[in-house]
Amino acid sequence: MKVLTVFASGGGSNFKAIHHSIVSGEIHGEIALLVSNNPNCGAVKYADEAGITHTIINQSRYPEKKYRDDTMLEILLGIEPDLIILAGYMKKIPDKVVNRFNKMIVNIHPALLPKFGGKGYYGMNVHQAVMNAGEEKSGATVHFVNEEYDKGSILAQEEVIIEPQDTAKSLAEKVLKIEHELYPQVIKAYCEDRIIWKNNQPKIEEVIEN
Ligand code: GRF
Image (cartoon, rainbow, N blue to C red):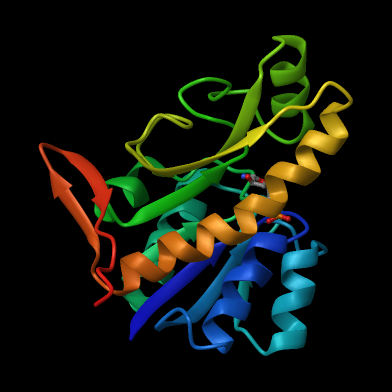
């Protein structure tokens, strides 16, 4: 059983999807903690309802950045998570946390990285940029987190086709739907030790059915 920590700032639909997969027995893990910067977000509300421990780390609680970052690291070291899952977390993870948990932090991005990633590409901006570029497809990417926004090694991607009638809003809905399938699948694989690193690139080992 792997120990998981989730970071979320928003609606928390990915957090919920992951938690549902744990409750149904698909993912062999437990969410030890939800970390958020936003005490009023959907993710925190869901954690309350589901009885998941949560903590708020933000500027109003910890005004000094160094102390805030150190507190985050301390909390995580206390939990000893096997995996840190960013699920719509809107803040940058401090370098000291990224370095300490190397290859142990994953994020989901609502586009096909390396396109449409990096600073400023979040929320509807991503989908609007994809539409403006006239792309024929978009999708979701799960990647490991390094010190740069959306630049860590790509672990899994799932595509969606953009139809002529699509808008940024309808595209966002389509992508979010596939995120709810892709992210739990990847976390399931991680919890089953099926992430293999070769030449510094991660790959998911598929289960061979007999
Ligand atoms: C998702 O689109 C995810 O790709 C991005 O933030 C959004 C989070 O949505 N990183 P939710 O809070 O999980 O509903």
